Amino acid sequence: MTISADHTAQDQQATAPAQAQARVSEDAAAEAVRKFGITVEDYMLPARHQIQMVDQNGALKPHDEQGTEPGHEYPLPSDAELLAAYEQLVVGRRVNDQNSALVRQGRMAVYPSSHGQEACQVAAALCLAEGDWMFPTYRDSVAVMARGVDPVQTMTLFRGDWHSGYDPAKHKVGIQCTPLTTQLLHGVGVAHAAKLRGEDTVVLAMCGDGATSEGDFHEALNFAAVFHLPVVFFVQNNKYAISVPLAHQSVAPSLAHKAVGYGMAGERVDGNDVVALLAVLGRAVKLAREGSGPLLVEAHTYRMQAHTNADDATRYRQDSEVAEWVAKDPLTRMKTYLTDRGLLDDDGDAQIAEKAEAVATQLRNGLSEDVPVDPQDLFRHVFATTTPQLKEQSAMLAEELSREEAAK
Image 1: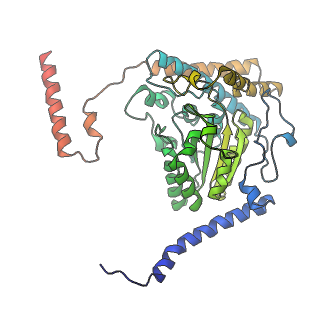
Image 2: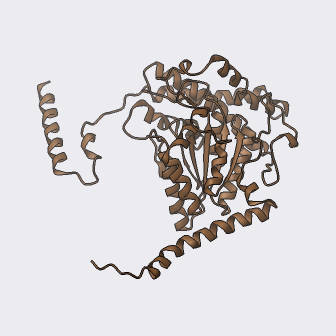
Image 3: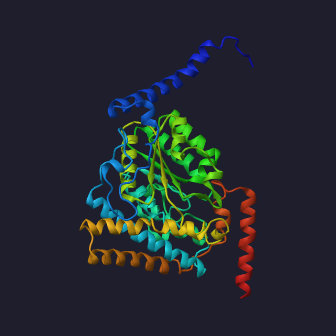
């Protein structure tokens, strides 16, 4: 092999694409600055206070108390959006409670409840267009359902079946990932492919606060920023990575502040205020679609129940802490807000509750059905082309099953 001593031309060729990409990112940041009339730093850094539009008592806050600043201003979502979000909140809460019961009955193997985080789940699904992609975590079942996936198919993974239960390409929803943070890399990959194809696609990649401590988080954000991809990274900060509190994970002013280190804009929002979530995530998706590059949104919320049914949350947090967050429940907050505005009455609320109960019934019935098991599936899906060893093992199993059947 011959190695040339003259690297100048090769170096120039290698650095040209990177320089072009850097110019694209700089131009996008400059355009955002011109649009909002602020500095680059003010565009990238989150507002000094988290965005909150409706307080925990269900009252709309005065505009000057919502946490907004120049370049970080959000209009109220439409009444239709708010009512649709409330319906999904009610359904999501009923699903969380129903699934917890199904686990206790042995009909599901495990369930990571998002009780208390439903506002984040619902807003994540509703802010996307039909052709956009969402990449959820294992705790984001309510978001998957709000995206239009059949409830029973959504829960197939948690009953212990070998497949995900739904077609990701059909619904534009990635498989719920149990490995921590891998879904962010998947989301960035889809966004990169969409950009190369010239598609009008935005990717919403979801994670928790614990995921921000993983190397995959860094790799995903850095790649998305360098290649200027249309990705919204949505961090649901529920204060604990299983039993590890946020203070033992990061001492940054907020997780949203991490965005500036990658050259992207960050924002933080009250994760129990669905009105603010719809506004903030909706704007982030719009900016990403318009070519502003990736953005990071941190939602402050709380996991009211245990990490999963196998977790004892009383070992690492106090009941008084949970009670504090019960008072901030996103469901009751939204109900009060809509009722006070005359957008929701008892009859309307009863109709929504009836829809939620129908979903719960669908889950009970669907997850009570026996799943047919074919032992040959052990060999069919290991490799695209079955190896001789697997063929041999498959034949041995078939012969053994045949003998057992003949002996009956």
